[in-house]
Image (cartoon, rainbow, N blue to C red; front, side):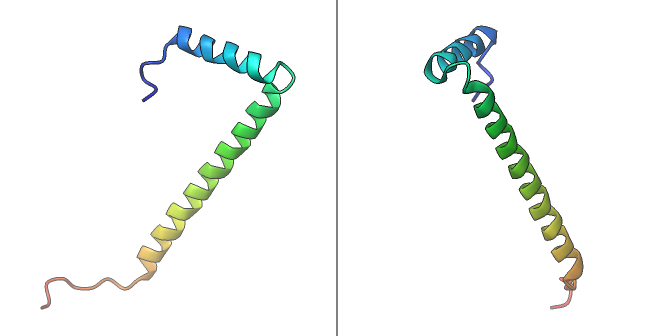
Length: 66
């Protein structure tokens, strides 16, 4: 989806964000976005590790027995 955005596109997005939010709000928005991404990554990591622990704890069934 974002593979077609080059440097000129990023500059245009930054200029539009600067006009809309102003220079004082952009660092706050960046920090909030960074915290959200960090929280999402840690939640996803814990979800995957919990799932792996559940798979290891569950007894494995023999599929050849019928």
